Image (cartoon, rainbow, N blue to C red; front, side, top):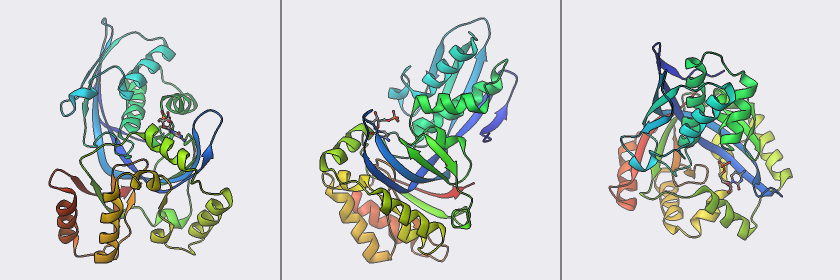
Length: 304
Ligand code: C5P
């Protein structure tokens, strides 16, 4: 099981919840259950939310505080849903106080909500009298959200199905990316995942299974570089409406020779920064100039 605990007391656990980016995200079609069949390579980032989860014996109920985003202080928060599910499954009925320190903006395609939920499950497993098995945690994570199980793997992983079928990637193409510098940049707008998938469905622009397997094989055998491999089928669905994404991508490619991509269903984008790249300040000011001072930029790296 992944290690997410940063502090541990008798009745309180502090956990971190890392972000993800989708280095490769291909959508192959719409399924009968309404979800989309996808294949994705995900990397975890050093930037993370953190959660404090406190056990209160003799009381009942779940309370959540989220100082930076008051609108996330609801029982629909995925972290609360995770806590509730854990208590129900284990048949334990103590109260839980949750404090969520968000670093990751919501509706960004960085998996913040899903990662918070998974870290909440791991924290509950620490605080509880009895633990859920890894298998039970994986099952519960998949019920909470399609990309939750991917946060139970360290390092780079591959997600298939609706995103819940996860396996590790052990070859050197993946290993070489640990420590890779990444600049995240996000316009001051959030995007809804269901909307983006729906827009893609309407355009019917899916990848073929053959193409996906060919690309994966080429990357795994290191016949193409990570820059050539980067891909996201959801971009076209977003960029058709939000033209400023393609405009800034073109500008970054032309000016710096870098290859920007959107993460998941957006709105956050990323660019891999080579070690020898010396123009980070110029790149950042280009983004602020194009998308305004209220855009969100973070320098981070891919972690194990
Ligand atoms: O699984 P999760 O609740 O995170 O998914 C949110 C929404 O994103 C789904 O209700 C669906 O509209 C869309 N989705 C999809 N295909 C996937 C994953 C998510 O259409 N593979």
